[in-house]
Image (cartoon, rainbow, N blue to C red; front, side, top):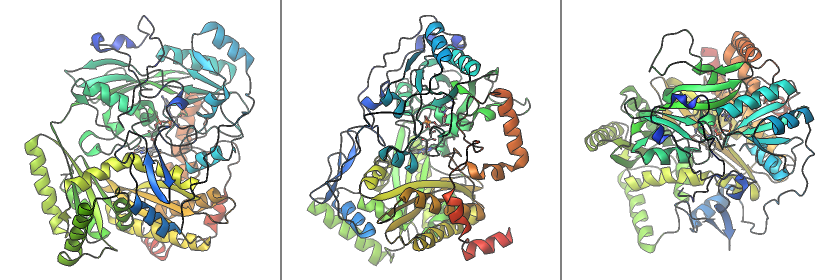
Length: 637
Ligand SMILES: Cc1cc2nc3c(=O)[nH]c(=O)nc-3n(C[C@H](O)[C@H](O)[C@H](O)COP(=O)(O)OP(=O)(O)OC[C@H]3O[C@@H](n4cnc5c(N)ncnc54)[C@H](O)[C@@H]3O)c2cc1C
């Protein structure tokens, strides 16, 4: 994570643009040096996730990790190699190569009047270079990455623009509306819902509006503990500049190294420390969004208003379909003096869920508490790097303690990782209470080191998907939120459904696992990982999507939501209408019609685009039935 910083070349306009007049402490209004350069491909992989130099790879039959930014850097991973071998019946193929940048790119659709006016009347930087367009043509879904590797995109952006402030966005939106050019706001490109993927049937010029050069901290108000940032600031940059002031926003989605503030607002993101700091909707005080019909924003920064429907909530979750978010006022907190990790072991997942439920009932959640099922626990254990002889002996003793003294079956064991933040005394009190509650559900502490490793690995795990694809395994995560009384049932049914769908598709080697990542008064967020080895399957992504579609049907049948934090995008738009009712979707369409009458923000998220969507998944879903447990539950609902 400790990445080198690259200077962003953008010049800050000399006079503050309209809108920054809100500044309260101009001494702090400053440009932020970003870890991500304007030419993203110089630091980030064009064909997958993360930094260019960080990657899993095979060497003499062992999986290793390279790069210098993460705790696993330079490590050999023999246990992980064994896990992969046994799970997927796979010997590493070190000879496979990663894809090469294409030599040619789709010819850009031109809109000469737009380009002429852009060049003649504005100072907005822009590019039509193939690679600039390609790296902004997609997000991080399996489909995106597979399409990229196999050169399957019919449509990539025709133009990339880099506005530097709110006023330049206003100019761009006016121009695009006037000349009927499609605009696609692009933050960090970490979307896992297809939200930033170019609509493949769009006939107009597609202009990607890259927000990365709008990343200033505009003001900071220590009295109110509020800060105003431009929307293109990347998570790790935002935290770094605030920490220099002794402050934090505390919003840490697992993608926060690369995702942006505007992206968080547009997708309703959730950070792992939401128990202390809140989800993005709890952190936003004010937000500005430029639409073809004008700028939408609340006029005052009061902490709460009773002033009719809250239009911040039209902006939150708008997924780039209504306008461009330019500036956001957020709450900040002093950096906590103490941060401590912990972990717990439970005999099985059900006991772990009861523990999580009790912690939520008593509202004593630490900053983060995550419960992994047995499959994820074993996977996490396997990721540990090669050990010394002594460390291996200690592990064997610990394992004996767990199995013999505690009588825990290793095929059912599950674990929770904990992160405590606050004043020393508060943390101590919280730890004591959490360990006391855990004991009631047969849980016992397994050390801070395990907890810390769990959180640090979060950022490395994101790199596995590309390595897996490289070795012939397709994998992706999906998530939901669910009321407490259906939490265990939903996990069971979804896993069962995936197992039966794999059998139906003759897939022998796969992994499906779940974890509870967030808790609330009324329920929890569940996160699933699913992957399979695709031997002799001509279109593995199509099959993957068909199975994921069935899993989503199962989730919905069990009372789960369409999404807790990934958003709807294109890949879940099929269910959006049902999720919000006909009236709800008509209301959204009416708002869209008012704000964006020419549909220039035509990403096709939320409600499906006009184009005929490929629906192999639906056919697959129609051919199967929900599990017996789901059917019984449905009957009860
Ligand atoms: C490895 C990994 C881990 C992840 N972990 C989490 C997690 O813990 N929690 C979580 O909530 N999500 C997570 N995500 C999903 C993703 O990171 C979030 O959805 C994130 O909020 C997207 O931000 P972004 O800047 O990358 O947006 P992008 O991917 O660039 O865009 C996402 C959507 O927002 C729109 N958008 C972006 N910027 C603006 C703007 N300024 N104005 C208007 N619309 C805009 C885009 O048009 C698009 O519709 C994860 C993704 C990955 C790949």
